Image 1 (tube, rainbow, N blue to C red):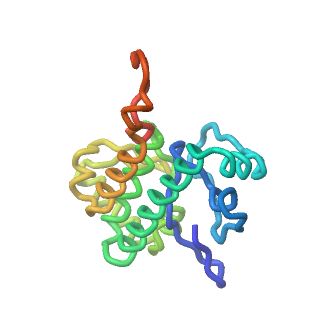
Image 2 (cartoon, rainbow, N blue to C red):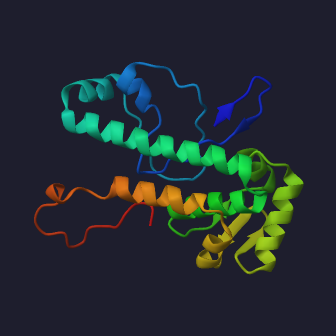
Length: 194
């Protein structure tokens, strides 16, 4: 989240298990200017920055991976900025719900209208109206802070183009080069964003 002097904040990037927060510090010894909040329950790894800095310095593969991920994340930030400025609350909310639905692997999402308003940089009333509209259209079910995606294809149609653009960029990042896949691939899981 990007935080302003008055304390207000808006989400500018959404990181799942495909990425990491703090990579710029590992690459360039810089401090992050953003706030990171955990939005979904699950496992995470916390790594000493010195270890990441050492790997970045000593491994060409790690450098390529960090730089490629940073470019992909930057494209998400740029798309999110455009989305936040140009699209309706309902479109932004669809984009965000789809991104979180990817990361939650289809599980229910536990978010209040107040939280969604803060994340999207919208007022609570517009989030409530958008949620009511999506629920009436049969796209989601919403009760007491729990959102269930009912019609993912419909949600993708109502969403602005931003979700598909970001998804395509992350899918390309996550697809390993042909030289990286060796031997039997049975039992491998799909992309973390699917």
